[in-house]
Image 1 (cartoon, helix red, strand yellow):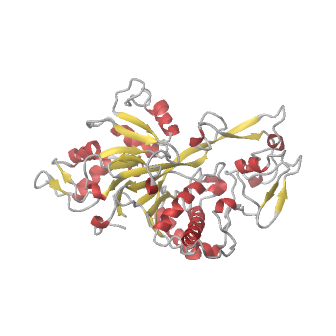
Image 2: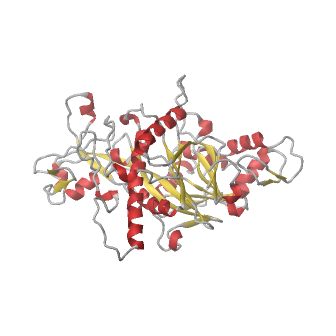
Image 3: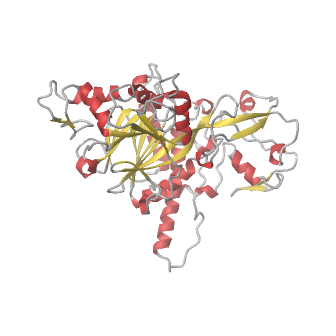
Length: 505
């Protein structure tokens, strides 16, 4: 839902401060989210990422306020801040009021500069009466402590390690704490008045270097670093073949053998937030940077779609904000942990399958005494195996380790064929940097996805500017998504986010 016309009938408002992933630094990722029922009360707004912040709030106020203001306080009548009472004369002073008094916390998806630069620089601005909450996965908080607020890159303005106390860290539990909340709010944390939050970790590609000092498969695992070993070996053949590497050798499947020198791949953590209006249980899902499961060393999107599916069935999840950094012309080996339209649709097809499964489960629960008719796919798509372009199984390293538990001889099965890992045979996994186009085929009957996402808003964020004379890349991405949607018929609505835009849900 766009514009201000239905604001009073809505539960949530999302204001887009920055919508791109660079390279233009004035529009990098940043959002404000509030519960409409809180009516702009003090401490009722949260920021989600802050690549830009104060500068854009000032710009929006300049564009929407009369100059000079006729009186103080002045109630804004149009634009994203409509209904807000401003106490000062100038856009700069009123922007400072918004950030110091209204914004209670900042949810950071991951600590890349295009998601945090505005927040860091703005900490030097006028302080409020209490420290700002900086919330995220423990790995994100550790990055701020060790690499940002470390008295080298920036003064230690946190309330830890003898800092200045302007920022307080809030380490969130991945998947939510089961001790918090109940019913639809179970596992959600109250971040500010009227808003509840649950965080999940996602993968944002892997480091170009091979090392073991950061990155993880799951932040909830208790280990900051989980890596994948691959033997050092020579490769031959075509360019694409040379880009392929085995992530697991037979020796590693069978417990390892001496004398094998290993390189380590670490997966970069990002995250996604479910943000829920406490009063009406309406919510949105906002992703940080994320890569598709089908080419990830650590696929983690599925559990988010499984979490989202019943919320779509119940009607509580109104929108998904998800990145699409490039158009489909970008080769897979140059995505660097991001999405393009074909992979956005691939992920949405998985979501649609989970929604179909959730609807079946709901139907069965509502009619428990009726004889159940056996159908082809009764469970979530996690039981199914994604496929690569050649028709083979696109299996993650973790899955291979689990499947090969008995010395590499356990069968790997799919719906169409059976394959065995034979002693001495090295299973060849395609490295995410390999150029594989159209990698994923639907792992479920296509008809099941039709119209499953009807009414869901999909807001595209983090579009990277091309800086060329070519047509606007956002328009190209939208055209490609609509073409894919025409073919798949999921039923969702696509929007390309722009700075200064306001969404009501």
